[in-house]
Amino acid sequence: MYTMESIDKKIQILQDIINNSNSIVFFGGAGVSTESGIPDFRSTSGLYNQEWKYPPEQIVSRTFFNHKCSEFYKFYCQKMIALDAKPNPAHFKLAELEQKGKLSAIITQNIDGLHQAAGSKNVFELHGSVHRNFCLNCNSFYDASFILEQHKIDSEGIPHCTKCNHIVKPDVVLYEESLDNNTIDNSIKAISKADTLIIGGTSLVVYPASGLVRYFKGKNLVIINMSPTDYDKNSTLLIQGKIGEVLSRISVV
Image (cartoon, rainbow, N blue to C red; front, top):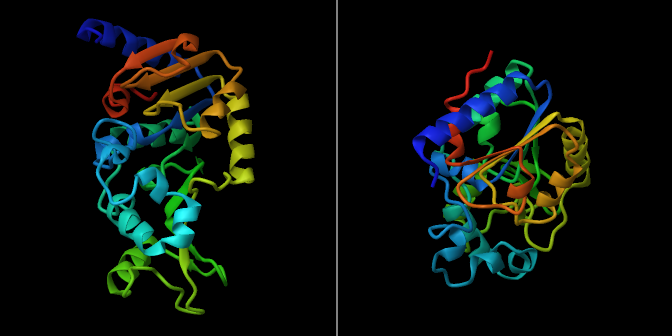
């Protein structure tokens, strides 16, 4: 663990990096939202370490959705939709950095929409969003509230389209599904043009999303995370801590 003195010094270095950057990109994962009360997947208390009838890794796969849709929605509505969650200091600070022209893009693995709720505009959601849901037949759009309500009233807990009665699927990337090509392309462009890349709240073990980091050719690679990552040795600055607590101490000028 770092001492308080070393953390203070590192935050001052981060402040200097931000002050001297003109095109910051933030790449974030589940750790950004844990401070908003949304559980991550891989920590000791994360979703992958909780007891369910089926392993969570299996539940959030396209095969499971196709064949055990009722069980999928039981897990999804209870554990992956958090409409009461509010943005935390990390979300608000990143939105402020964007508003001041310092931050050019946010690339997130999260599906909760909290970056947009905090005011961020240029957000690339690698794994989709719980706030977008589409009928698999006619492509009609539904919001997250519709999913929760239909889960309660449907006999099997499966949301169905009000127009054609087909199953509605969340616009989230499940295992066995590909990431959206347009989102990937925009993320690569943003990272390749950045002078500073801040990575926060992610262990960088989920591919292909974590592979985007290799496109960074800028000056400063900053990693803020509670646990080690494979990119730590390549970082300009490494801070072990909660992303919200760290970013809340940054001033935006």
